Image 1 (spheres, rainbow, N blue to C red):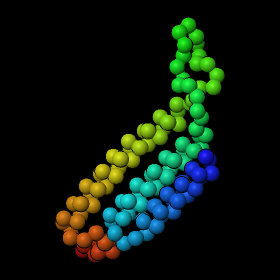
Image 2: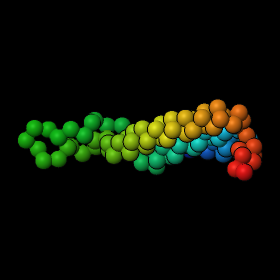
Image 3: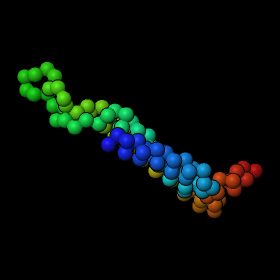
Image 4: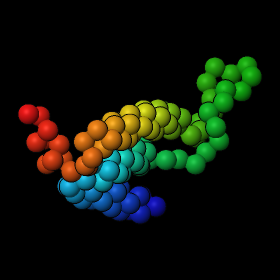
Length: 115
């Protein structure tokens, strides 16, 4: 299972970098999103996902029983997903506005509008 997750993380990183090297702002955003998903999956894989009962403390006990799943990696990944969606939504709005104003999504042509 870990080997498959590592291969998927590598493929996501490769696809994200490839998309970011294209000459289009839309492809840049897709590459940025893929890199974010790859980082989230890498964090989840590095935390070694465990199958176990949820970490609920029984009544009268001070700590959950041994062998429960660790909720911290899932909480970190969930937070990163929400922040990533916010960043991508803001970037989509910026690219859309730049395309409306300048009529292109080529980064080289955007550079020539600074004059």
